Image 1: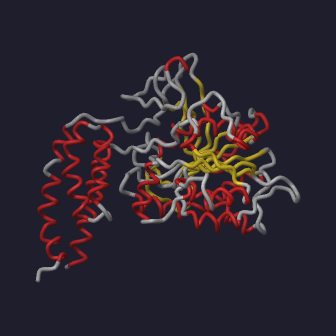
Image 2: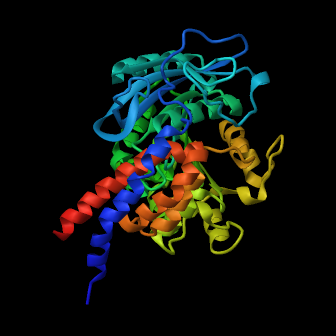
Image 3: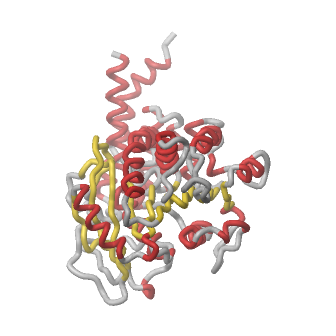
Length: 427
């Protein structure tokens, strides 16, 4: 009897040939959004706004200076200062990122970088102080992006969030090594684990800074795992308490197992000064979040925190006991002002940003095209055979769909590595 392994091994050369046969067609087609959008332009235009952010990352530097950081991991955190110019309000719709169609970008119509500097920690904190001094209440907002995000995705999206929310904050982007690929869920998940210590260190440094008034954290999707683990570690190190300056924690569509969250929140008995008001935890649920759909496929029947229905038990009573404010985005649509129970009484930063989140504005620029979803569906458990079949099916789509085309090379590279590993493993 011929084993399935033998059949699969015999099919590998055919699958490899089938996939490679469409590469020329893909490469010959038009490109999607240009890479290297972080190469600074000389000047902005009247009416444009600027967002100056400190960047802390566990990503490795990219080979292309204009991309700054890649999806690979580095042992110690790196720092940067980036100033993003956002087009005048008359040229854009709030909630959207206007990506350049060609380089250099046009500040009249596109998000562009005015400054993008690699710095050491001391230099980064010095520049951060300049921004902080201009910020009312000396409020800091730390953003942790989700799964399937490239570095430039996180930079431009965070700039948009800060600008469009109207929140008066000093922005700090914490970005971890995501490959920016729909099929790199496992790599991204391990990168999230890899980065939690660095995020804890960042929060500790900010909390100890005498110039900082308060710290708000906004995390999205898998970024919530990084944030909750960092906060859990901080609480354990400090006898069950967070740093007093951490006043707001916003969890948007968290890709976290509900049972794991229960253990995390039990460790994070968040309180400021003894007898003071606990940190304000706000959970935004999103039952139609695509990243959570991928996560459910990977983890089987595991219930993801960001996809629960907070109106049913045991979740309703449980979150009330834990003083976690829940905003169900399935029941909230775009409005001028968000009036949703106790959430309306939340601090100003939470209200301003939360109103945007609950109003349907996206927190991610994950580049998943229609062809990527074909690959995902056909790959099942991400086997080489399934992935190869998906790449063949997605090839015609990649010619027409820019996002699929942009990701196709990375999918091919991943398949090549997988095929090589498979052949070596059966020899």
